[in-house]
Length: 72
Image 1: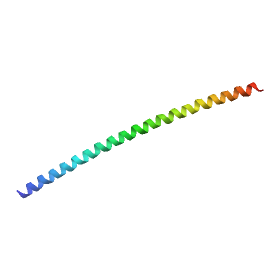
Image 2: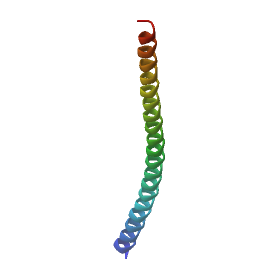
Image 3: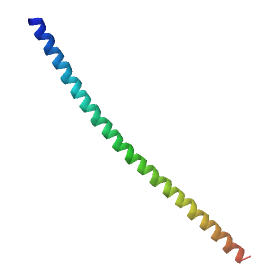
């Protein structure tokens, strides 16, 4: 009887620990997903700013070319 009781206690302990690990894993996955979304949003913002800089530099270069052409 004593060994059966010890085995049941060990099984309950293992099941409780597995439950805790599952809970921690779900929390970790949620945190990683949240951080991934933030990084993705930041990457889109950087891409937008980079594109805007390319457009602004193109407009300034074209303006400089036309101003230089006026004073020849």
